[in-house]
Length: 420
Image (cartoon, rainbow, N blue to C red; front, side, top):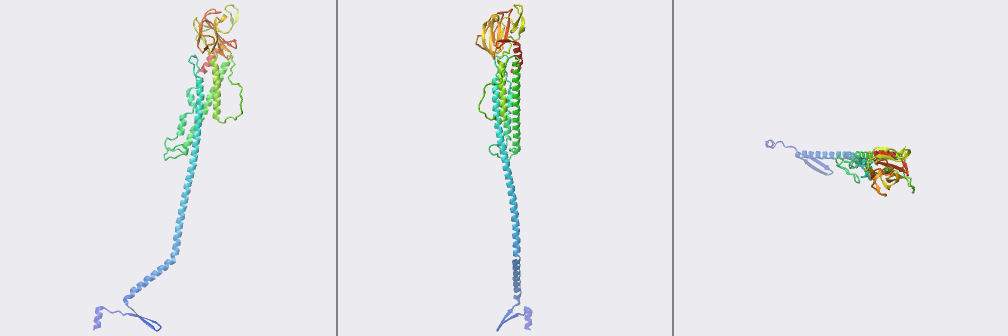
């Protein structure tokens, strides 16, 4: 009855298991309580799982490490390849920039050299034309003054347009500079290869224009000198317009600079033109009695006093007593006084064997040895000497031989267009 109550109060009592361990003579008893079985099994299970996991980790660790190492190697190689590609691109860009910079600097050097050449040419051309201006300065006392054969506008055009050179070399106003090595700007107007190429093309155009204008001036000077020389020769005067002085010196190779050669041609043409013009200016090409009619020409005629054929050595102009008689060219008075049939006469030496005589004057206004210019009044018309009435007797003599003055009057009319 008591055992039954115990079971009802505390439940059925589980039996304990006894584990007997015998080793030789020793016997051990180990009592296994039911409450310790489950924790013991759990511990054994955990240890088993840990052992299995450790074993699996040790088994698969090498494969995992190898895969990780291989992956890292691939990633590193990819990064290295990308870095190498970027470096290659950077090297290419740097090389291209260096090449472009060298090309640009070379073009800049070419531009500066061409600018200096154009500037020096500009100065040399201006020297030539300034010399021409000085040579062609008009005489205030001249009736037919020599005007400059090369007008200022031609001088300006010959210079090739200094402002155009400056604009071409200045290039874009914003951005880069052209000193030493080229510096680049972030602006769109920075100097580039195309801009420099346009500048070179512009300077080449200016240079070509200079050559063309110099050649045009040279041809014009030569043609003008040839025409004037032909007109002067038509008077019977031998004009020596080409240098024939003795020359010499060591042999030196000629300059291969085409611009210098063209300037030398222009200089030579201008010198020859100046020689011809100087000769023309010294010749008696004017009219001793402007606006007066000719009453008797050069050549054979009936002598008014003897009534038989005689050579008239000059031209007679109708003029009242006291009318002005003007010198027909610059020169030196070689005679001024009374001379037989000429009456009161003035003789002027113009050089190169050319002299002029003015006869039958009522009054002489110059003295022997006096320098006179074209159109100077040298006396007054009259009827002194062998004369039938007041008029102006005008003679032109070449090496003391009378020649037809009409040659010089006609030549003066033709040359007037070249001297103006």
